[in-house]
Length: 95
Image (cartoon, rainbow, N blue to C red):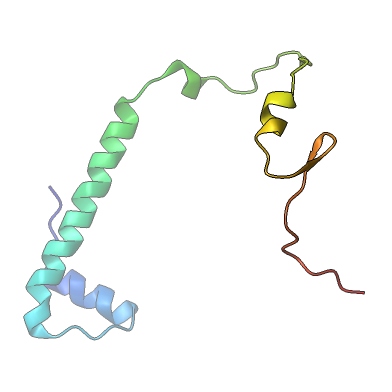
């Protein structure tokens, strides 16, 4: 469990050019400790996770082309022209 001193918080505040008042110090210490503990826990979980897909890199496989019938998808379009969707223009063309 991480512990942070008042002096460390005051130093961080000074380096960050933040003003921290005495009545805020205890809350800030608790908040920084919570953040550090959370980061430590995330690091532990990440270290414990071992999935085969995370160890593989540069997997090489042949690209394959598969014929797909686009008609069922195109039938759902509000507007279409041939094998294309018609969509509203959202960008103006500068001429």
